[in-house]
Length: 185
Image (spheres, helix red, strand yellow):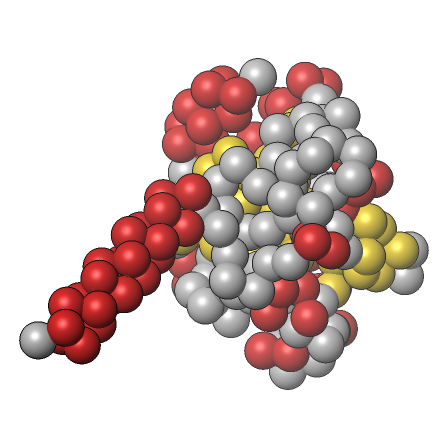
């Protein structure tokens, strides 16, 4: 009987601790190194966390870092040329970028290049649709993996400090982008 009581108390303790960690938003793989020294915020891919920085090449071969856009609101959009919802979303992203870039809003299109036939197809796609927002190539899929992107498109809305404020799975239309950005600016 005593062993059962001890086992029950341990189980209750584990459940309470697990619930606390879940509600706190802790990541099981986050350690002390995940702490962002500058802001004091933990880096991660959940709301309220500092978005993990990355560096990828754009369509012209220039290295673009997510942190280059610190001080601006950023929509980090993960997409692919073959994805019908991504294709439908592109005109909305382009129009929103044109209308909001003067308000310090950036759209950063992260192409999931390992899922493409080749990177040239991405360039053709961007040219055909006259995309003017920055598009970068995640050729190794490292950023896709770091952000745990499993559905396309997926968009992370970051505030000017680089903190994730919203995560959207599926295509976004202009009005949804406008509403989301207006809540944090």
